[in-house]
Image (cartoon, rainbow, N blue to C red; front, side, top):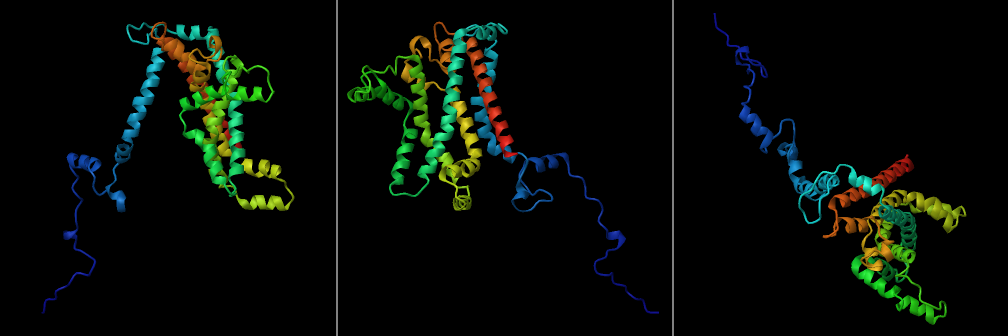
Length: 339
């Protein structure tokens, strides 16, 4: 009887040659796979060498700067607001809520709050609408339009101090504005732009508008590029005029940009300092009548002789709360408009 040799069928293995379970990797090897770059199971391409800590590595410098220059100063200010610390250091005692109680009873604090809120109430609507109208005008490709675009953006490049000194020269009693008005026989005596408390505040608002006009115009120019031209053409064929097309097509098309500009302008208005300092001198107007909250914080918290860093920190926390409330209100309005 002849013995027959049976060959195994391709793709099958004998039970004795079946591979057993892979040995479990050691603890050290598992740790190395989690930390060191290497092929990740179930991944392909660049993801094979990506580890969970790599995004944190790339963002570490930004996170470090935010913690050092943002989170730590905020927490330190919050802690100082419950003490009677001095600007130049020394022993600081815990006073509880005394600084906040003093702040609520301080007439100068409420005057500074009124000036800051009034500044925002007047500047924000104008800064939302005027750059939009300017963007609509300079968007068209007309002869010489490049010169006007550059001219409107030039104040943005100038330093706030340089702009403030220029406005001092313009608005002084013997400055260009009063001299021209007197020579034109429009006024008999000089207008006290830099000595009357209300005129100083209004002049500072004009300075803020003039300097920020070109900057926010760029925002609107980018937003106007996303408004379909077909809508304007269809509305024009239906007989809609320029004003109606502006309010019913342009404004809804750039509503998100308007909310962004309003938020940024509102925050900047509550933090205004340089304009008041340059036009109202170091006192913040006659008798400090034009001081805003940042100006008031400098006076009460940073004066090396009479300053109280704890009280100034409490006012800073109040300014933060006011700014945060404005930002949350703007976000809520934005969500309501989008819905």
